[in-house]
Image (cartoon, rainbow, N blue to C red):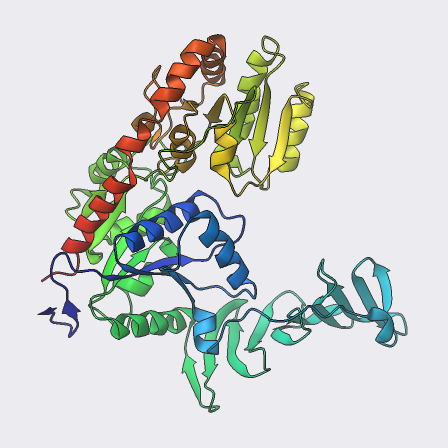
Length: 511
């Protein structure tokens, strides 16, 4: 081991590292970035590294959420999940034991106003509202004063108070928030300023309090503790909101830090290399402070360097595909599929409009749209207005995208922009060709026009419809393209991915 000026040690090349992947948060319905994060964790752990995914948000069901992601990502038992709230509570936050069913009828003057919602009123004025979970346990209680909500109290499934939020007199601005363990011990109190978290006061088991002036300071202290606990560890930031914990940490100036960029750095309409979005621009402006910047495509690296100049620490590591070589492809149905978040940047309406151009000629083919999001209602109405209500099926969120792709004739991607397009990788990996816009970034890196799919000019709905028509016109050609699609298992293999990350980890944090 070599000694760095900051006092920590740096490992010899080839040594296995402790890798902390900073994901901020994830939920049961998180999308491509979370899937990519878990894929990275799995591959690094299978290479022998000690890997932990860090989260910085509070939720009582993280154990269940983690178990779901660990199972579908095939993590095994080597990857750990560390959460800042659980760290300072000194225990998992999830409740244990059977749920306690809330009995509103036995709570005095409570009246059920609708299913799962009970209220208490005094002289006609609302005093409190009790709301239950789908399993019947108490979820939260809102307390009102003069018709304004002043306290919001969250309970676990055993009806124990866990989080209490106090509001100012307007009923909208948060004033403070307190957090308790299952035993009722207060371990964290957060004061708010202008509705944003500010002072954090931690309480140890001995009751001794430690104050942090801001949420950033609170988080930075935890990251520093992890850093000092494992000399030579590497921190990978997957979220720009967390970058400062590495490059501006007041406790540590010698962290080994990697910035992973999943998305475009450009602002809409994503064509001008000098028109930058704030999100990734914040990382690229201080790129030299990181030991490495990881990008997904050579084209994005070229665009970045055209604006920012040469970045010696930038490296391109494309996504790896997760499908096994022996993936059993079931009998395909006469369906076209989209698996994506239903948000404006995905331009799902373009896919519906392109499908409308081929629907009449192929009455036995439907379009399945898998995903959830804010645009569901609007897109459903748009499909109906196009006369496709019976031909466009909105299937909801899927935890098994590979199974969805493998049953389809082909998939479609009409995004405005992507970092690379993990969904396109997944589709090709199970032998499902892709019709796609040639957006920045990744489409042309993955799709060979006429070999494993077709590319349409970005934003050309008619061209996307023509790509669909070509894929539907010849079953023999579609079969050839299906076989060619699985070539991505070689070009974007897990072996290549691990090798690239091994090279990166060997190089960072060295003297």
